[in-house]
Image (cartoon, rainbow, N blue to C red; front, side):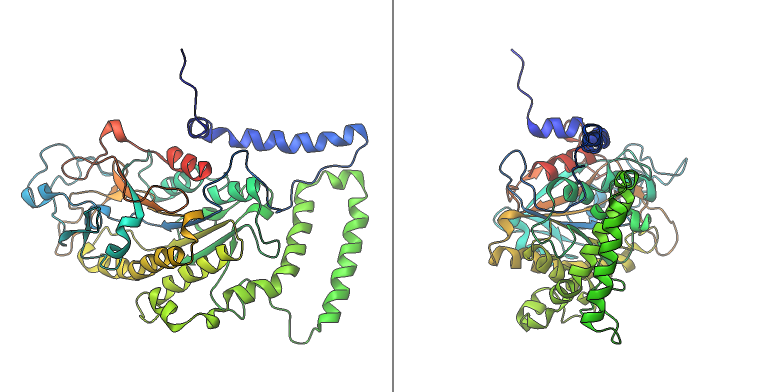
Length: 440
């Protein structure tokens, strides 16, 4: 008797075929013209119900661009100390041919925290307070070793440009609860190597792409504020005139088939609605000082990222479906001992505050928080000089999730004795992660 296939398995096996599904959906809508009927629009962001009851209503996707060294943060390996300064007991493959085989111990100490007894390094002291609320995947792998291709793989499922980000798929399939804000919003504290393609809709209609948002309440989005010398009535007359022109063009049959034109109209309409809503959501003046402190906004080192984490909470609270926060600069090829403490400090308290705040407000149960890099770092020294670092490691690294139906306190998989490679029987790929997000 054949074992029935689960929805998660279907999503994993067909992750690369979503484009074909989307194309079929679009063409199905266009076929209405053959019968003289009205074309069914596919460019709205109205909230849509999935086929099965969801566990998560919203996603906050924290993307650590550059390759976080999780063996120095969450995955201690005593054998790194044992072999420190010596050749690794097995071959370590890096990007360079005949690359360094000299093991480098973590400069930071680890302790166990929480009821789950999870090891966390001294780099993440605030995260220890919420370690019981997360589920770790300790056997992540990717088939790409360079930043751009690995970033494309992790955010889109393909190792090259031209495909929609996971947030665009969520927006396309589920829409959003708030019609005055985009379904998919990107917040940047630093950049990914692939730039805006990290949150692009690619060949899906532009309305499903990530809209970049800043933390300035006066101008949270580019050109969103009405000019001071234009009155509300003047703007209304312009918008009415544009809408009349759009209707006139849409009455032409050939223009109706122009997906880009229809998406542009929807974007203009959304932009008009966003003028007040976006500035309202970005205005954190109503938040208490205690809440701002919870997110690390009273600290120069964590204020920027903390502001974005707080804004992410306000966005999902307002009904935005998918929020992506990007933290850049994690490519520690050199001087990892000098660079990593500042990077981890910038995210430590904000992430702990985000999970704590969502939990206190009863939002964590239906908000899925995802944290990961495109890959990890090798257990060996890359630079043999005074201030060494670590090279890219696609063979084994950690990530974590919290809320949205994910079981807290769970650890899945493991890496080998040096934190170099995931144990084969537990290896997890980007397809599994995307399937889990879509399944929740």
